[in-house]
Amino acid sequence: MKKRTIIKTQKEVEGAVAMAKAYAAEYGLPVTIERIACFLGVSRKTLMSIAAGNEKESAAVSAAVARAFDESVAAVMEYGLTKGVTASMPVFYLKSNAGYCEKCEEASDSGDVIFLNGDKI
Image (cartoon, rainbow, N blue to C red):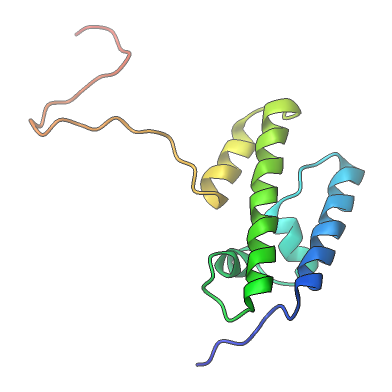
């Protein structure tokens, strides 16, 4: 099945970002990729696929979506650092949408169980 162009112009993306910013300002929220997707009439997953260059959109549309995605990640990060009541939602958002992850300690190859920050056994 042939992929179809979902977003026709860069102006559509810019308009959706402007509406998302106005919405966020009105409600005291960060601009999210979900809100931008809502204003474009596409899913978050589709918008992320466009940002990654996996869809048939023009280079200008893909670049505008990628900028909007980066801006939304920055907005959520800043909101979590300055206005968030708890860090849990921004952390979840960044892990789910922006590729952030917690640094995991690597286990040794010996098969030993390692307890970090625990009482001595």
